Length: 106
View 1 (cartoon, rainbow, N blue to C red):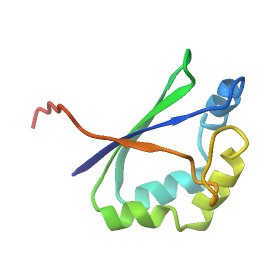
View 2: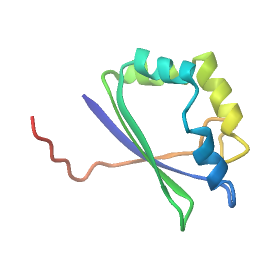
View 3: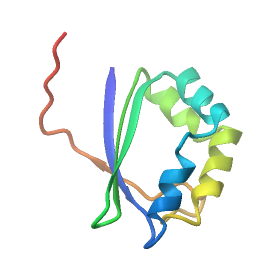
View 4: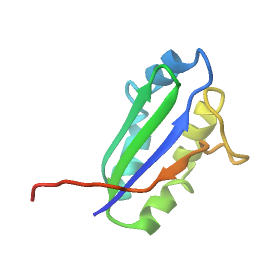
C-alpha cells in the first residue's frame, strides 16, 4: 500500500463552497478514484490558514498518476479551479509531504 499526503489551499472566503462541492464529490469521480486503486482518501481543512491537508492510500503509482489523465478528473479540476490556486493544467497546486512517522496495527 502506498501512502501520500499533501497540502493545498483555498482562496479567501471560498472555504464554504469548497466544502459544499465535496458533499459529496461527483459519483463518476468517486468511481474513477476507486477504479484506479484508491483505498482511502481524506481532505481536511484548517480554517484559520485555509490550508487543505490531503491523505490518500492506493495500490500503484501508475494508476494514481493515470487519474489525472481522465476526463472526469480534468472536469473536476476545472470545476474547482476558481476556488483554489491551480497549475496551468488546472490541477490544484499542491506540495507533497514527507512521511515522518506511521503507526499501523495489522
